[in-house]
Figure 1: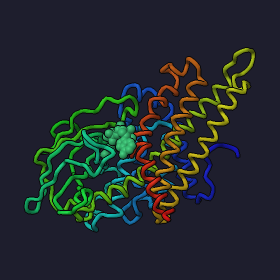
Figure 2: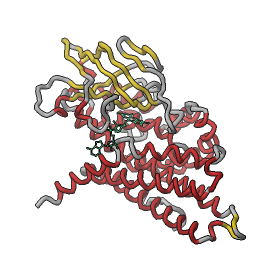
Figure 3: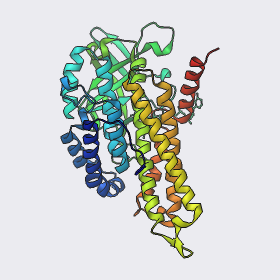
Figure 4: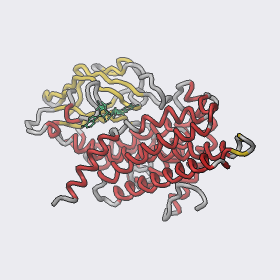
Length: 396
Ligand SMILES: Cc1cc2nc3c(=O)[nH]c(=O)nc-3n(C[C@H](O)[C@H](O)[C@H](O)COP(=O)(O)OP(=O)(O)OC[C@H]3O[C@@H](n4cnc5c(N)ncnc54)[C@H](O)[C@@H]3O)c2cc1C
């Protein structure tokens, strides 16, 4: 095995896309990531480069102007990008989830309207389920959409919208009156068009400023406050009220593979930094890589990187095959995010005091890794999904 995290059986097209993205990451992302991240600066030039490469349309079907690639290709691209800087993958992740939900569940008119512009990156999506009082317990959503003639009127507060300010389309989950007994069957997904920016962006919709985060800087994460916001009934995803929970969960499975891929990317980078530093730093008359305590750390880190990569690609392939992948995506997300936190921590330790300096990349990775334990469902929620699936499949 020459390098870690290699994927066998890729087509020529997949290999070409990945090699182009890897070059872009090495030349345009890694050299600028530290400065942009420390300044909490939106990576506008990098985003423009991604648009040029067609990455916003990676999974959008060719008939709508996209590249029509698989979830596996997308996940491998995300892994490469997160190896450079996780925030850049954050810019495209919510966009992909929304494009995927439209592709799978949108009406023909919705697909025709949104997908070509999304493929060009002209329309950029964000994804909003969480609220100030809930994240894991999605069915408890309080934001309400009340039907009034041909419109719905939306009231409520949303929290943690990644790309909330920089997107111009929000896929929003809100409560509607479907008269269903189960709470999740009264949830509806809406396509909310809005201008980019902050403040009162549309009548009845306010995007307060960016939330100041520990890491994952550059990309904006916001609240969204709806007060009497009007949206047409034709903006219900799939024109199917009450199906929003199922549609969002389908999107979240794509999101989970994405988060696993990001975790793989960060862990690969943390390993690369550690293995390089360990061969440069000398203590007690030898390279620290020659102390068995350090070389064993490298061995464990590499094994974790490799396992996470295999589980992540397995989950992506399963979804591509049309099979149910809730358990595989949950397992991949759980393992990749937990291993990422461990590998990053070990790389930090190998760097000694320098790991604590802002001059070294590892300090940034240390602040990024914890988010992956939370985003798209915490580890506890992944274990809930995995165990539920196991008891379903092993039912006696
Ligand atoms: C930077 C960032 C970006 C985000 N981007 C988005 C976004 O774009 N769109 C979006 O909708 N959301 C987004 N989120 C929200 C994210 O999905 C939630 O934070 C996450 O799902 C957890 O929800 P919570 O924060 O409400 O925690 P809670 O649900 O309150 O959980 C708190 C703790 O309790 C545990 N817990 C909860 N329920 C159970 C249970 N049944 N059994 C055992 N333990 C349990 C959790 O694991 C956790 O440890 C983002 C969050 C962050 C930090």
